[in-house]
Structure formats: structure tokens, C-alpha cells
Image 1: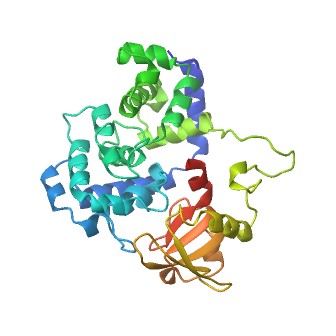
Image 2 (image 1 turned 90 degrees about the vertical axis):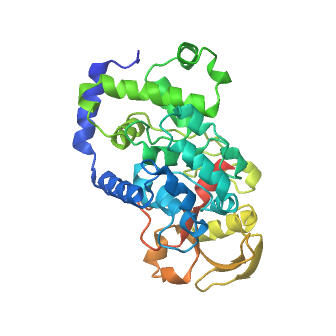
Amino acid sequence: MVGKSLKVLEEKAREFEVEFDRSELDAGWKAQSEFLERYPYKERPELIDKLTPDRLYKKGAKDYFFLWVEHRTRSLGSISTYGGLVYPNAVANIDVFKSLLKIVVDDSKQLSEKIDAGWNEIKGFGGDRLIAKKILFLYYPEEVLPIFKTEHLEHFARSLGYNLDECAKEYWNKSYRDLSVGEKYELLNKLLLDVKKSVDRMRNWDNAYFARFLYHLYPIKKLKKIISKKAFKPLIQKRRMLFEPLDELGVAFLFAMHHEELGFPYIVKVSGRFPDVTAIDRDGESVSIELEYKASDFIAHGHPQDECDYIVCWENDFKATPEGFPQIIALKDELERS
């Protein structure tokens, strides 16, 4: 059973209820309900066949499937997709995506089967299957936790005292290291939800609230190599910049180094006036990019959001992306993933 006594978890849960403001989650649940109204594929899977490319993803549109998956429901659980650059791959393979979506909403399939389906057939959708996990959560919010990174789930399970290898042998009859991504997700999801069901105070919590509690109780500490005792956070040395940027100029330096992998193979113009950059994206289209240190600086500087396609910043400090806002690419997230 869990290392922390249930009594201690009960006390921590009581403290959390006093401290935590639910307004952000409430807005997220409202958005999740609107998502299900627009895309009711669990109850009516036959509608998946009618999903058009523009309804799946259309840059700059106000309503498409992935806009709800990544941005409108972000407060319930966030994923990073390189500023949405992988979504055109789903459009280009829409029949494959539709078949995968049918598996996600199929009640006869195990959670592991849904995650281990052929998501890697669409570039950017394989790996840890973050997009698949987020879609699964939106359709099964009472059965799945909105914690999408395997390493985060492992961190919480171990913090609660679980021996993952023993649990894997009991549940799957094999070692934890031999499990697939989907098998790990099913096991870890079960272990954490078992804890939630065991603590009286947490039984009636929704899963997004419980996930927030876990992140609060067991913070994720990112391992970074110590380079200096100064009050700077070290950046990976191979990027040729020793420390995290402190301002927009540092963001401009990193963007110049990584613009190709971010999806902008050609730079047309760099200017000191808004927008900072005109570039060509992977589709051969001209796009405008504004560089900021934090995403919210775009508003602070009074820039018109309808005259810019992307914001490239170091950190996305929005809890929820404003309506109709340019797509945000946070270098802090993208460089950690690469």
C-alpha cells in the first residue's frame, strides 16, 4: 500500500481544499462540456467519419478539434505540441486519425489498447502519446487522470510508496521495464486512482482536482546540471547558451538557433518593429512572429493579436490562452522536450 498513511493524506487533502482556488478548473470543465457537445464521438462514433480536415485543424480558426484538446481545456491538464506544428500531420493522415479516434471512444477497449494503438503512424503523435492521452481524458474524465507524462505518473506513484516492478508483475505478469507506454499508463492510472478512492475526503474529488493535489503534494523537480552558484538557471550546454534567457534579446538568440526545428525553415525579415519576424513555415506560407520573454508581454506591449500568427517566448505564463490569440511557442518547453 502507499507509503504515506491515509490519515496524513486526509490531512493534506483538507489543507489543499482550503488553499486551492477552483475557478480555473471550473472554467476548464465548462470547456470540456462544450467540447463534448461539438464532438460527441463517444455517444455517436459514426460522426467521426464526417470529421473534415478544417474541423480537425485549421490555423487561425476559432473552432477546431485540436484547439479544444490543447488550448480550451488546458486548465484541466496541459500538453505541449511544438505550437501545434504536429497537427497538420493528422490532417494529412486524417483517415488514420479517424480510425484511432474510434479506438479511443470504444468502450470495449482497454485503456492500454487505446494508448498503444498506431499513433506513431502520424508524425508527432507517437512517443509518450501525450495527445492520445489528452483526448482519452476528455472523453473519459471520470476514469482517467489528466496527467499525461509517464515520468510524472511514475514520480507520484513512487512518492506514494509503490514499488512499480512489483505492481507490474502483479497486474501485467511482467517487469515494469518491459511494459508498453499504454500498459504503463493503465497501471499507473489505476494505482493513483486507488489512492484517491482510499481517502474519504478525496473520493468525491474530480480527477483534475486530484491531479492538482498530486502536483501540489509532490512537486516535479527538474534535474539540471549545476554550472554556477549565481542566481541563473543553467541551460543545456549543447545549445551554446549557458543560462536561461533573462529578456526578449535572449529569446531572439535562441529562436535564431532553433527556428528550423520549431517549424520555420526560412527567415524572410527581422525587424525592430511589430511583428519582429516574418518567416516561411513548413507549408511554404508566410507567417508573422512576435518575440517576447513571457507570452503575457504581448498584451503588455499592446500588440494587435489579429496581426500576428505566432508568439515565440521563453515561458508561456498564461493559465488559459486568451480567445483568438496567436499560437504560442514556449522555448522553455520545446527545448526540454528535444
